[in-house]
Image (cartoon, rainbow, N blue to C red):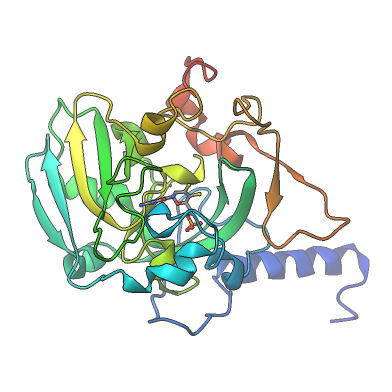
Amino acid sequence: MQHLATGAAGASLAAWASREAMAQGATARPGKLAPLPGKVSTVSGAAVMEKITAYQDASTYNNFYEFGTDKADPARNAHTLKTDPWAIDIEGLVKKPGRWDLADLLKLSPMEERIYRMRCVEGWSMVVPWVGYSLAELIRKVEPLGSAKYVSFQTLADPKTMPFVGSRVLDWPYEEGLRLDEAMHPLTLLCFGMYGEVLPKQNGAPVRLVVPWKYGFKNAKSLVKIRFTEQQPATAWNKAAANEYGFYSNVNPNVDHPRWSQATERRLGEDGLLSKKRKTLMFNGYEAQVASLYAGMDLRKNF
Ligand code: MTE
């Protein structure tokens, strides 16, 4: 290796090998939960070539307000969440409404590993190897009607197992929404696992959404309902503070949050004294894949 690593050819081979290793999902399984392997995805943008965030960080620094508002609360409190039995109800403007049990959702399409950047609106970010398949696979099965323009996502709100449901921080249940074309985009992931294992409860077990070009709060956790609508649905953070959190919430370094800049971010695990803040990328680095969805739109107005 020493020999190979010298010279330009060696350097590029080494770079290729480490990229290949990342693309193969070479992250060591943490060995904490049931395995859920995913095949290498062929979707464009599905394997970011950046250092993967440590599982320890991704599973202990969380936002899941049903279990508390401190970053450490979800990992501490979410053990009470009951994930079995679990189902998602499909409602609204579709030809085939109905209930999908988790077992059937798990079988609906082959699992893929998707190594995505995730950028929280608060200004921190990480790189996570998620496991799941494009939400479009499920949407195609339920056959939206021509009148369906939006998709709304509702998550579990069970005061018996979620100690902060009932608190006034948010209007429960947590709700999110996408335009139908955003929901159909191949990068939009119906996610069942991370790091080659099923999702930890604090990360939204047993099934959540991951939309990598949007701020993290669009990624509704512990989904129980998907509804197809003609009107733009209400969303939890928009209801809480409409001037701060818009419906689109695309990652955009040029449009600041009213209370802080969105130009840079802090990557979890890069907190050393000398570590610089990273520049936030337009659409979180997925511009090539998703910019066309917003052609002609004023992204300052539609934040
Ligand atoms: N989903 C529910 N049900 N409740 C929440 O409080 N928080 C959101 C999102 N999904 C949240 C949620 C926010 S603000 C972020 S940044 C991400 O989940 C965090 O996901 P992670 O903890 O897996 O990193």
